[in-house]
Image (cartoon, rainbow, N blue to C red; front, side, top):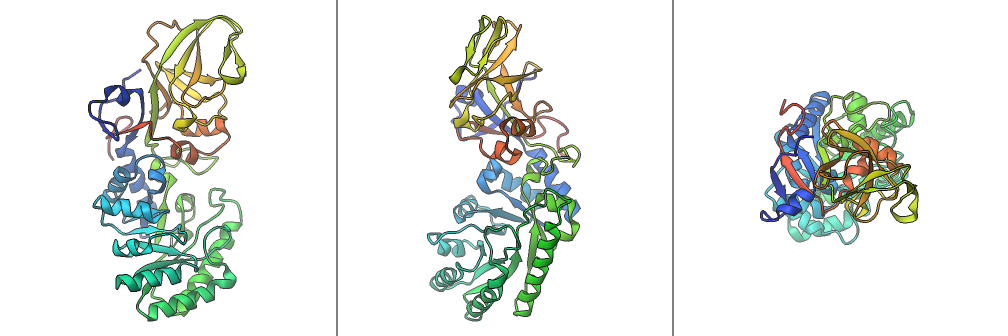
Length: 396
């Protein structure tokens, strides 16, 4: 098996070589570039918002944000104002939208940092007060709930929200620059609810324009809609999962969509030993060996983001695929290597997904979850390394 390339490691001291090589998530920035360009071409003339919330789905917010902006994204999207402020503190000046707030959100800091704010309605008064104190109008994207049932004003309250926003806009405290929504089942293209949501969204846009708002941006499409629903592109698409090279569709792979997975997760094997038949493995002894075999210990566990509920998660060692056996523990799990001699196994890289081997989708299946969760949950004990074209075709 090829050794992982030695490259920039963020969050790990330069002299801490052991930590550098014990556990790592290798992020191929050329894959990020490829994926952004791919979706930008599909969505044109709509703009692309690179969604970098949740530490860029586990890939590292700042490196991904910079590469996405270099590659055709014109906006960045985050859930929380704190994430947006981190982007600004790093010197990123591109337009940023933050959309998930509580009454404790620091709207004043967001306005001072020129961060656009998503609003469902209840936030408008607090945003206006913060803008008054800042002596600078806030930029607001009003959200309509067209069927997802999370954030956003209901259809019944939409006109009231428009009236409130118009009042504050007339007072010079905010500008409504966008109207947006979020789709519930765009990853299931045959379902009719997406058509219903888009119809409701168009109605909400008409009402906003009738209320006198000069909208710069109308946006509804997430990754699945960006890839499968041109009628949902409007002025901007929000590129999340697809930027990281993963497919949102059950019946289409990343390759089918011409996307390149960006993350490779690996760890060096921490122990290996020969054991006899009927030897138990891990808590609960849910797995017992069928015969004399070699057990290898991978130092990644649920504290690092490997789901505890995973059953037979795929692992590649020295070019051969195996599966996890027994329960995943907090810091480690076990792989049954069969007839492989134990000598020489310790220190060998074990690849959970990436680089043409196992995939995040396979781990999602093993854990009964989705690929979004597999990459997003990778913890801080796993060093992120950033490379260019470490596998596949470098660049475009």
